Length: 558
Image (cartoon, rainbow, N blue to C red; front, top):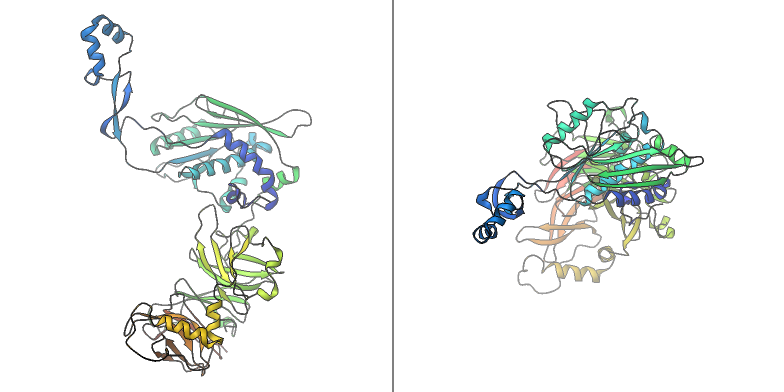
């Protein structure tokens, strides 16, 4: 398995785990031969902006002053230097508009690149993608046999690198070699777009050695691949050519089973989204059997329903008589949902299966389906006793990018903060909310916290005696912020009658609103502005605390 701290881990993490250890040494040697991406020196355009050096060519009104002094002292030497082209001229510096560098790789997956050379092309794709990423450049790749159409600047180009893109690359073989017209079309596209960096990857002779793009001074890089025709040899010859630089490598091919797996697709296709089901056709399925989880700053509410699926409702900003929009996502057989998160406009499900944690993306393009498992470095870190008793909310701690999936964190049943990184799980904190849990059971910590809340955000009015305490039997749901009479942090509690919600600020105990059904589950948003309630009869409600209004009410079908 590839090391999590390896520079190739984000890219090789898109592949099955058994392919990483064999491709890693390949990528190191190939990246060293290709070299880093450097900015190209641009001259001849833009507004003049002083001088940037000397040149042997230029008009005589920019001749260096020492040359004019030579004309006065040694006129014959001045004439000789003029005839031999040895005069020095000031070179103008020109201001260029800021723009991102662009690196493009064009591949020839034709009949001359079957077997080993195709694996070499795949390695070149990973190397060039990481090379562009480290230089802060935009990376794109395309097939030479699919030239861009006129008037369509983006046709044929694949931006970035992700699991669907890798699968498309591996399966994108063709029976035809690129024609001269294909090459001319791509070079014309490169000239018009002024690409900073261009590579041609294919068999020797795809383009003429040393060919340049007309109107652009950047030479075209070439990575030439060919089989080794020697008895008993399973290797690949690579030649990297960039201007006057030329390097050759011979790389041993991975074991035959891994080569076959890679050539046949290597990357599992993303699962299709589960389409929503109509509630009228599945009576009783939408009844919540878990606490509701408020996601996306309270704009989404999700729960596990009686049909063993995840139902996600869209919460309106104002009360509406219409039923909210919803989607239902089926759970995998044998999996137990642990936590829910919302990132990049989609639901992410953290579940436990066979004693292991898995991350499932409902669209399949942020968290790869083939690498959902998140193991702990210490296998004993996750035990049945650490499973949350109720459904938890997972927070997104890092949004990730095109090459790396986001990272998540949630609280387990032992009050530990569990972090889910792209390749593993880890315990970030042993008991981060132990103090909050003690608020419900012990009066002394609660009195201390309420006393501190009385001094939070706004000075309290003069008073004597201990801080205001919630009535006995209240359940703490989370924190909330009150604005009247002053901005003040407080606790959101559910009264013992299971119908009244209160705000306790340490200065006062205020009743927020009363519902007409006993509440079984209640959760609040992290910033304390919305609360979701599930009653004993399965009715779901989402309330706005600042406005004390019900934004969404869904009555489960009977």
